[in-house]
Image (cartoon, rainbow, N blue to C red; front, top):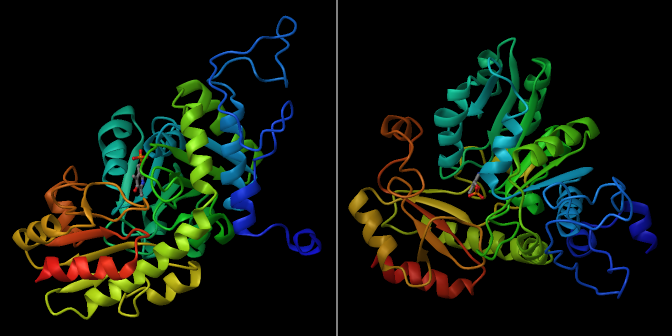
Amino acid sequence: MADAAAHGPRFGTLALHAGVDPEPVTGAIMTPIFQTSTYVQPAVAEPKGGRFDYGRTANPTRDALETSIAALEGAKHGVAFSSGIAAIETIVKRLSAGDHVVSEENTYGGTMRLFTRVLARLGIEFTFVDTRDPERIRSAMRPRTKLVHVETPTNPMMRICDIRAAADVTHAGGALLSVDNTYASPYNQRPLELGADIVVHSSTKYVNGHSDVIGGLIAVRDHALAEELRFLQNSSGAVPGPMDCFLTLRGIKTLHLRMERHNANGLAVARYLEAHPGIDRVIYPGLESHDQHTLAHRQMSGFAGMVSVDVGSLARAKSLSERLRYFALAESLGGVESLVSVPALMTHASVPEERRAAMGLTPGLVRFSVGVEDVDDLLEDVEQALR
Ligand SMILES: *Cc1c(COP(=O)(O)O)cnc(C)c1O
């Protein structure tokens, strides 16, 4: 306890305890699933706790999840959503028509679709750049740039954005920096500590980690920014249900354990594939051969389970991914079970072909989400599929 008092609790302790207090009436150790749409008020316009008046506005199970993600990201405030995309949309909805966003060009496909086909139509302007180079962010910024949005590592090309450098140029231009931290998880990377203003997760992936919930989370330090995001959460209404909040809280309790295994298995699979003669190229930030390995090493403490390989052609990509036994052929990532996908035909099919080509997303690219199985079984599986 003396140590905890001196340093504050460490990550694994926060994963178990942040936001999770015994329920006051019975002492139930698990956060109850407050499956209710409304609350009885003791007197007119005097909701309990000053705010429990309606389920979209406030829910105690959601509160616990919001407290938990804030603690894990070294933030002060968490805001929960019904999906990662709803969380990202909320960040941009702070802006008005005519405002401008600079975004990484190799974002998650659904983020690109939201920006170019929905929010651009409402008059918000976007410029897409390669955020590996902070100078490109700087030169894309305009007087009305309010937000710079990056993803690091990116999906599936594993580009790394230097968060500290991006924060510096963003702040010099008077904008806020948001970082999609889905791929790394808060266990491996904490963007707010590197100068970012907003961190966002698709908690569907590593944070929940069990492939049974769609969800999104935002964490921020600034109180006024948190109030704006909560206003939008309530006004637009893409809130998560209490059951999903409970499941995500349960997933978070093993986040540190899962990520240690994802990190170890991801590196083992990447090393194995790099040494395999049937593979043209392996992209994994934890490999010395990754062109931004030094930067990745500086701002991340582990490299998670996402490994991309180029097998040379679409036909080979299809046959490899269809022959695997333990790697299920599916979109999504970050769950305990291993998955494989062919981005050009699956997750990134909605990205225009010339944009895919520009970012090096070749037809022969195969993306592995390495799970927490026994790694020798995973390596044997890859071996038999490549044979
Ligand atoms: C999946 C994903 C999203 C979208 O999240 P949903 O929960 O599917 O809405 C956003 N960013 C990244 C990096 C993702 O992998």
